[in-house]
Length: 167
Image (tube, rainbow, N blue to C red):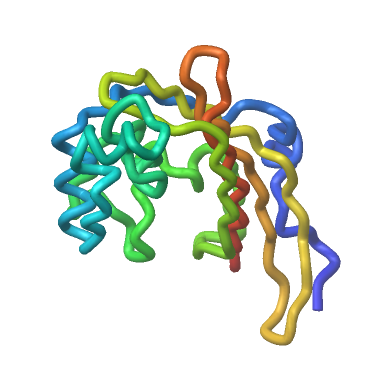
């Protein structure tokens, strides 16, 4: 066993900083297509009258669609073998050259406000922590980041993501 850290000092230096930011505009037909594709035909997403009767101003965007509003388009042939975008992906934003294998470790999202057609959403991701851990199968790095989704100055949702990076 070695005492050499898996964490690059550049990754440690990035803790507390915004590591990614992107924006997009909500489009009703797109979120409705997504809802239909995942089998969620909730009338709140499709019928303005039903949404108004339930306290919304019009058809509301399905909450789990929110990250799609600000994500770019990635071609399949540009993905790394682990499925992470090769260029501009998290692994490039948080340098951990000793840990090339990255995987999802969990996500917890809290929704605060409904989102509607035409809303401009900005996602701002901050690196919260990079910590080396040791488990049954060896050393790994636990990366925690928080994405705030904003409509203007209003936070409509917050997502805390844990990523695992392994040698």
